[in-house]
Image (tube, rainbow, N blue to C red; front, side, top):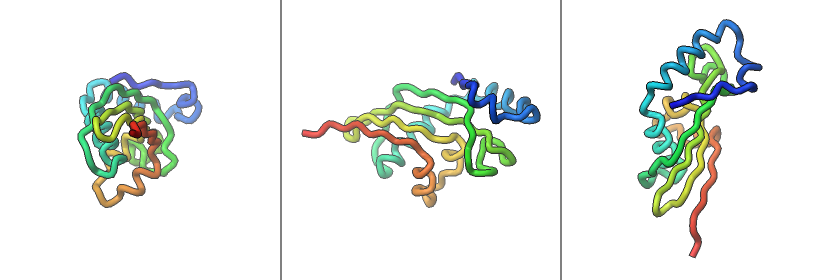
Length: 126
């Protein structure tokens, strides 16, 4: 997966964090789990039901406002993933989430994780 290093990200990443960020980007290029994470988060957003097909994912370096919740435990640097998903019963979902949130998800903290997600639902009404 390609991870964008935007101009906004350059404003909050310190020189000391650059080696970690470079390593993170290299690791995420090899990561094949991003689509699985997107599918999990779409399922969580749909109330825990359904199997979602991931149509497209995008990722960029972002700042997680939760101190210590970032990709690195001692930093606020994180990865924001935006995913376009589909389920034939629930419709299309565009969902944005921090990668560290998916890794911390355990089923008991659903409301907390969803409060930090961006969710748009598109369903057909008959």
